[in-house]
Image (cartoon, rainbow, N blue to C red; front, side, top):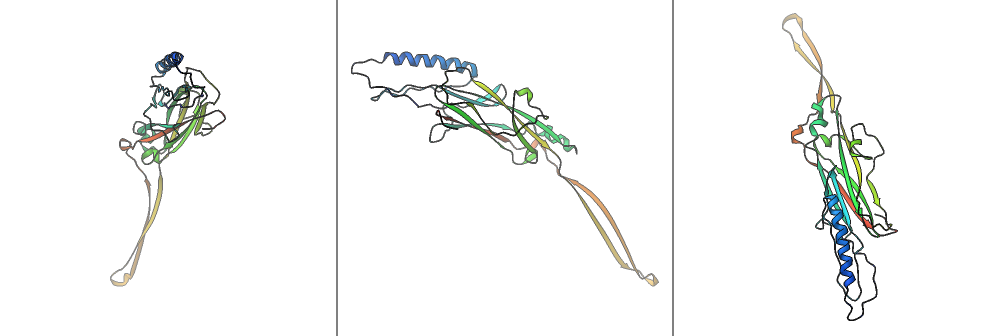
Length: 255
């Protein structure tokens, strides 16, 4: 979750005015946030600027979670964000649990594994929200594999047969005003395909010797061919990651 400090300034209040309506407004926003939080399992960040000549009111809340389907990890108010206060990240780890399936005992036919991912988000008020997805897989079986990432309709649609145009970003919420309390979910499919690395080596050994007596010089040679194959230990697979970087933006802007 990230802060949304955008606000619409209003005329300063006359002396003696007691801002009772602001208390009622905050109560309503808190009630809405409670409903959203209960539906997502996430922790929502709410705030209200103090009075300082002008009145500033909260525009809404932002929710962002990503990870395993049905159990995404949600960003919270403590999630590191950049200096502009509108960007944060959520990281999902994978690798050790899927390495054995991908390795397929180093079968010459190779192996494949599909990793479904879910992104759940909500952006209220005059805020849009977009995000990018970046995969990092260095070393181990995954590091020796071909990895593709595509959008799919559901977690169930993510299989090793999944095909589609590779993608790395999405904008689930435009900058148009929204008072929705229902988060939206999108699904991604990471497919890794592994084919063992094999190579063939041929060599010839020759020997020449001088035989005693009239036999003179004798020569002989032998040629052999061997096939080598690269191996991995799935139990020692390093942890890899998928990083989701989300950004909020104002109407007319872009992520």
